[in-house]
Length: 408
Image 1 (cartoon, rainbow, N blue to C red):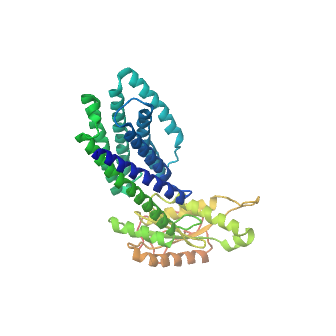
Image 2: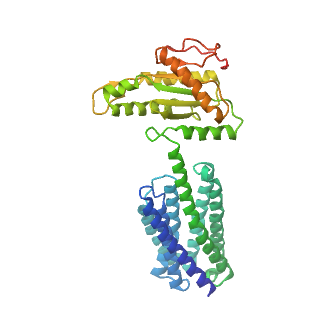
Image 3: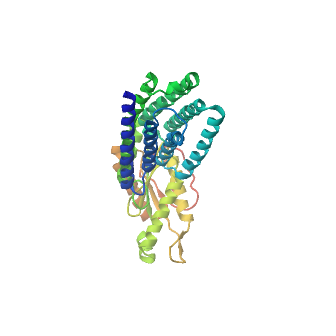
């Protein structure tokens, strides 16, 4: 009787959260993050337990075959939903229908050749293997694609490993004790249903929490990026620098301030749409040329920045020259026109700075250097004042002979 009540509660939890997940997926519209898949998984598992209650004990029937198939189809739906949550585009119905057809055929074959005990043992064994695979995938994700959700993924791995262990024990019990091991009021089945009911109470709200966490992260990311180029804006640069300087024994950074030469003339000649194309092109060059780990951003109008981390002054100058040369060399196709244009940039380099609070001073430093570069003819790199160690002829398109002394 107690076991029947627990299974009834489990059904209610699963079906209610299936409806909730479906409603959430409708609200998320284009980016559902797998919530529709999770809704289907809950629905399948809830229906499986409804059929189990209707069966009232192990039996060979169409209802039993459907019950077993739905029980194993549910974790597949959860697995596919998790892949969707982490940005992988995967189909839903093809794998589920394919699995259902194969598993129904496997049940018929095992029932006729080995008997009902083997069919129920197959269900427990398959469930144990599926949840083991899910646990291993989560452990792999903690080290790779889900690093930002470390604590949440560890908890999920522990909970799902519990299901894996219980199904493995059930598999052994069925092999040793036959179908009597599946009696609903046995002590093991009571533990099994209590654990599953607890999971049905804990895991769905946890999934909702993950979705809210991801939405919040997306909003924070949007707030820190320029909408046109997707480079960091001032806020994003400050937050990234704060993280850099606070989490490691960081070396001083260098700020490169880059301005598109004669940008107003480009807008006046070719139109603002061409001007936007130029800005996006320069942003793409900046993104592709900067080293891994450097920060790139657009701070307004035609001004871009690159913040060189973990390098010296010579490395900052080399990056600046690569940026200048790349922009100069690449032609830009103007939309709805046969015109192809080229642009150049002038880059000012700051003195090294070692804190987020010094970012504005570095910006002024680089801005002053940029202004001098503009006045000296544009399409050049300009160092901050009082830097006698560096090669003075930085304003040409010829290769720069770099020295490796630090900026004073």
